[in-house]
Amino acid sequence: FKRPRNCRRVVVLGAPGVGKTSILRRFLRDGFDDRYQPTSEDFLRKLYRIRGETYQIDILDASGERSFPAKRRLSILTGDIFLLVFSVDDRGSFEEVVALRNEIFGAKAALLNGREPTRVPTVVCANKVDLPAEEWAVSPADVRGVFETSAKDGQNLDSAFEALARRGGLPPETG
Ligand code: GDP
Image (tube, rainbow, N blue to C red; front, top):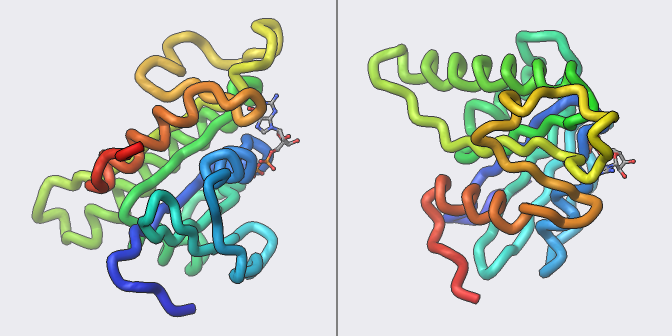
């Protein structure tokens, strides 16, 4: 797998079924390169061109157990920008995102030997907000400060993507 120069590495993580693939499909409506096939069931890596920029996007299913297998750990260590996704109807997926965030910061800090404060560009999506209130399993406090998205109706996906691009140091969208 050869990565072009200046390629931003985006790592998309969350419990299975929260909508990672659906969100990416929405983001990528303006063109993608699907030459790269899934490398295993819980790990998908593709190169995409979005608004003239090339992104390597790794989509990983997190399945509860901590301490990542080697491939996931490598993704995390080499990732530039993180998109963490939970689903508002799945309490466990919210807890997974909290644990993932700690794991990512821990891994990055270890990489720097704890010498420097770690800044990890991260965007969190609370997905499936189109679901009716009675199906929500997370509290208003749990979604405070995160992007409330729906891959079904497209809600807030543009703002989440723009935040991702901004935090990753990309130029703002030009139109
Ligand atoms: P992944 O395993 O995290 O990649 O999740 P998928 O993208 O495969 O989505 C899992 C299921 O949730 C699919 O049946 C999707 O249609 C559904 N889904 C994904 N996003 C949304 C959403 O925003 N709203 C609703 N209602 N369903 C969604």
